Amino acid sequence: MSETTNSRFTPRIFSGIQPSGGLTLGNYLGALKRFAALQGGEAETIYCIVDLHAITVWQDPQVLPQRTREAAAAFLAAGVDPARSILFNQSQVSAHAEMAWLFNTVARVGWMYRMTQFKDKAGKNSENASLGLLAYPALMAADILTYQATAVPVGEDQKQHLELTRDIAAKFNHDYGVQHFPITEPLIEGVATRVMSLRDGSKKMSKSDPSDASRINLTDDADAIAQKIRKARTDADPLPGSMEGLKDRPEARNLVNIYAALSDESPDQVLTRFEGQGFGAFKPALAEVAVTTLEPITRRMSEFMSDPAEIDRILADGSDRAAAVATPILEKTKEIMGLLQTRR
Image 1 (cartoon, rainbow, N blue to C red):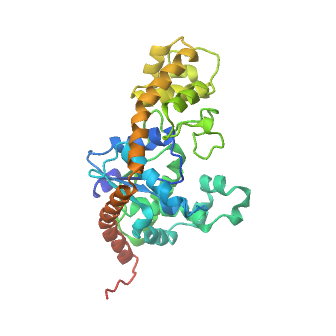
Image 2 (image 1 turned 135 degrees about the vertical axis):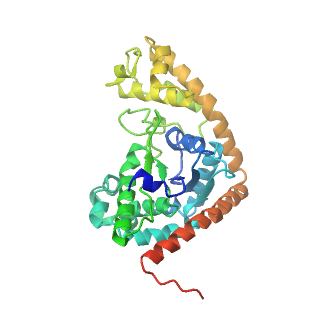
Image 3 (image 1 turned 30 degrees about the vertical axis):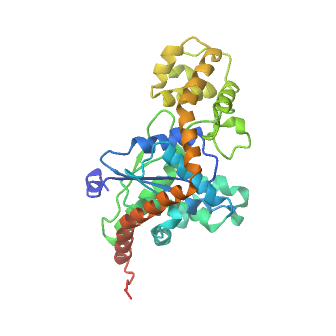
C-alpha cells in the first residue's frame, strides 16, 4: 500500500509500554520523551500501557496493578497530557483482544516462529513458553491496527514486530479485497532511541538486568544518578571531535548519545564541546544534565503515585475514549470477514 493510500486514513500515532516495573532512562529517552513531543501535531496520539502483553509471562496479580499505575505515572510525569492524548491500559478496551484473535487467523505460524524476540524470551525451552508469548506480535498488530494507526514510534528492537503488523495489514487487505487497514509507518529517529547499559555498551539498558548499576531508573534520586554515571564503564582515551572517532568505543558512544538526547543536541555538537577531554570532565557534566532533566520527572511521578484514584480516573477516561475509536473499526473488520453480528 502506498503513502497515497495511507492518506485515506486519519493520521494517528499509537504506541505502548509494558507495565513490568522499573522504567529506566532508556524508556524515557527512547519512548516517553518522544511520546510527549508528538502531541499537538497533525496526528492524533494514542498511548497504551500494554498489560495484556505483560501477562504473556507470569505476573504477580498483587503487583501488576501497582506497576500499571507506575507506568501511567511515568507517562504523565514525562509530559503526556491526557487532554491532548488518549492514555489507557490495554485490558480495559476489549477490542484489542478481539482483534488479536481475528489476526491470529490471518497471520501465519511461520511468521511467529521467525520473531527474534520470541526466540530470545522463550530460550531453549520454547515448548514450555505460553501460546500468548508466541502470538504476542499478533496482539501488537491488533493494538496498532484496531485504531488504524498510520505511524508508530518504535526502537530498532521492535522494528521486526512492526514489519509483521504491516504484513498482517497487507494480507488482510489482499485476502478480502479491501483497503481497510493502513500499512503503518515506523517513526525511528533521535540519537538515543536505543540507550545502552552503563556496564556494557553492547547491550540495551534494561529493567531486567540483574545489575541495578547498569541502568538509571526513573525513580532514582540525584545522588543515585550521579553515582551510576560516575561508575559507568568507559575507556581511558579522550573524546574525539566527531562520532566517527567513537565507532569502536561502545561505552563512550553510549554516554555521548545519552548526553545529546538529554540536552537536545546532536552527538557531534556534544563532542565539539568536549573534544580532547577525558571522562573525568565529561561524566560530571553528564550527571548534571541527567539530574536536571530527570529530577522533576521523578518528583512528578511520586506525586501522581500518591493519588492512585486520580491515575485510575485518567485511565478509565482514556479507555472510554479509546473504545470509541476502536469499536467501529473492530465491527467493520468483523463485517468484512463475514461474521454475523446480531443485536439483542
